[in-house]
Amino acid sequence: ENLLEAVQERGAQLAERLVRLTKKYPKLVATSRGTGMLQALVLKDGVDARAVLLKLQDAGVLVTIAGGQALRFTPALNITSGELSAALDIIDRVLGALP
Image (cartoon, rainbow, N blue to C red; front, side, top):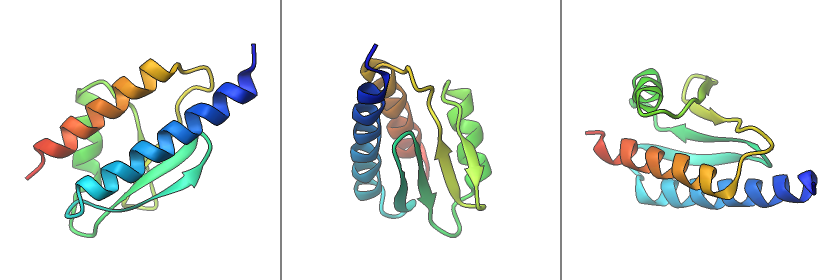
């Protein structure tokens, strides 16, 4: 069912939104990185990545930590655009609520 095409589209969607979050929260996020469906937001030094991870989990978004400061996103390959957008909206709200 065009899985490869859908994954490429979702990967581009994820990358674009992570770049926007990087620009929106420059005091919290250093950069975004990755490709396809394996991407990350790298938090700045001094930002407690574990605390952010727990807040995201409490809000219903599962991510992992990579390299100490990177929140790693590995959504299912069959995620829909709407589901991905909803998860990224939650991430935006959680980052916006941080001090």
